[in-house]
Length: 180
Image 1 (cartoon, one colour):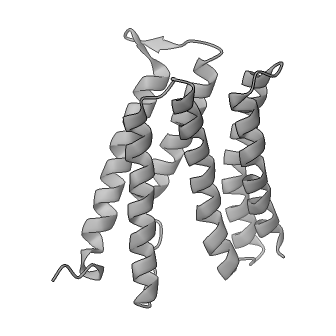
Image 2: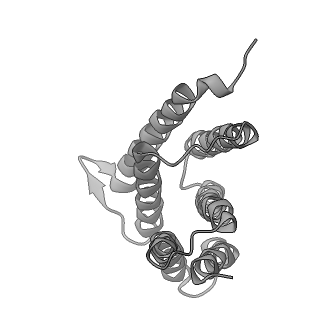
Image 3: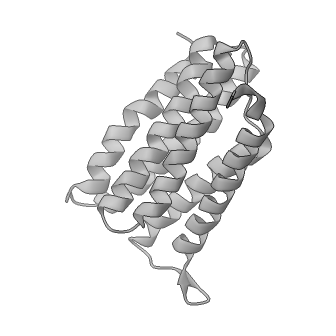
């Protein structure tokens, strides 16, 4: 097992630990929850860097890395929704996009093609991480801009970019979906 894959598996391990601190009434749970989410999110860049720098790109890594990202983001969205801090529609839109793009990638693989991550997908991921982090921090420190919570503005931006990215993936790869 490569070092990069171990880092990715560590991110997956952090997801349920993060959920415990997000949802349970434990001393300092808000602070620990934010820290765990940020650490887990940061490992995404670290494992990719390590894999490329040390030539540790593997088929397992290509499979598990995006899965780890989706598990972390989905867990946070569900947790924030359960806490009443996130509108369920935001979570639904983001999670739906992930199902659609993942399904499209599976169809592509079955056709012998690979759909690589593009710029809008990477921007989407960064915005989602920043928005979720902001919502977690906002539970501790309420920040506002023009009378709106900063976390809401960031989450709205993340949802817009998420929809754009999903539409872009589908439109660029619509030939893979035979609707006849």
